[in-house]
Figure 1 (tube, protein in one colour):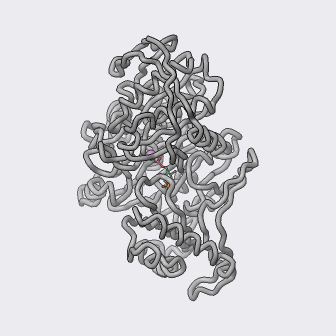
Figure 2: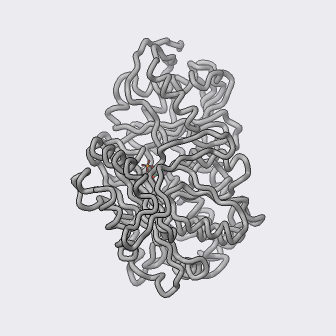
Figure 3: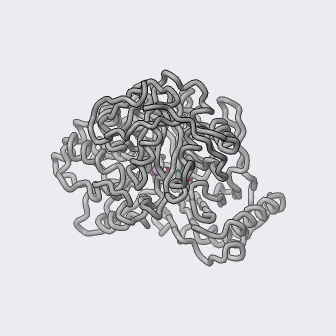
Length: 543
Ligand code: VG1
Ligand code: CO
């Protein structure tokens, strides 16, 4: 076994997006593609010798091959120890948990999250720092700059490590420890939630359906929900992780988790439904014949947080991404705690969590989490809901309806125009930017514009500035339209249009969402000229 230095040259396009570098599997299979990126990570970090690295992925196609490369490169760079999930599998929240618990210097997550997998699907890689969270932009940009100037990478020529067997082996001087994928994470969940109360709930005949979407969270949900909490076998469906997610889109929303929605719509539906995404960091909460929007879920959990032992002391603050509905702001105001509005992507919550300024965080894209780790956490949100249901004895629908009655309802929807031509999508955004000045104060019929801008964020902790994070058109009555382009897609561009309308009147809290938002939807299509720029008369996915 020896360390080799291999000559390479830059491969363009290795700039990480909203959550790491995501490309087609076939792109990652190109000679040197993964190696160039990993070398750039290690060189950007500088002195990694003697440190501990965590490595794991969502188990999608190409996961095992990529992990073997990373292990051999980590050894060539002198890491003392690498903790790797059994079978190469760790959910994204589990990576964050393991980094923190074992005091690792950082971790590498292999996932394209909610994007489809398989030989023709997507693959992804991202680096997480010592706090367990995604590296901030300053680091991802430095990594990207390295990829543009790379000339060589270092790798051991050691044979592959057996990832199936728990225990320690060596590559060069580096200890490679294959760890149980679930144990550390399950232990943390047990500290945060009232497992006894949830066990009692299931013991009393409460029924649940958890859809693992053939992705990484199946084994976690089986071990915790069916194992530790005593839910009957079969509570977890699609619980076996598959390399191609069964050919489906592992994105837990009512469109992609159609099977769960159908189960929850039946007359004999279980009491509670939930789903998670490819890498286990997203969650969807469903009641009987009742879907909960992620923005409402964050607000409801925040308003009731003290039911869970881990949050008994109350919340320090609530942070949400800019396009997420303002429902949680109302809860923060009622609790007398600060609320924060960050750009899209979990990396922007890290500083607030580290500084103890926020306890709960959420994104409209089915992401919820807290200061227990530094990633959003799908199963955590599901357990939080279970704790809430057990503590109150109420149904999901009752909890949400009562929340609306107390705080008002923020009707909310996201319209995605997927895989549109990049040129047209960029031109749409550019033309909106030009219109911003004329939109200020404009009378748009049913709505008057309060302000319109391109969201810019100054991190309150380190002062870093992130520009062009989405175009907002905010009305005088608090309703909003937000436009941004996805930073996780791998085909063309995806335009996301976020729509929000606040309704205080309880008489008007039970309208169909698209109907409640119809005037704003029309306005969004007209103001941005969506059909003209994209050729699409309607969105591909509405959530
Ligand atoms: C999307 C979501 C964003 C989320 C990101 C990663 O990004 O909108 O809220 O943080 O995916 O989620 P974009 O740039 O495509 O809108 V996933 O579960 O990595 O993990
Ligand atoms: Co994800």
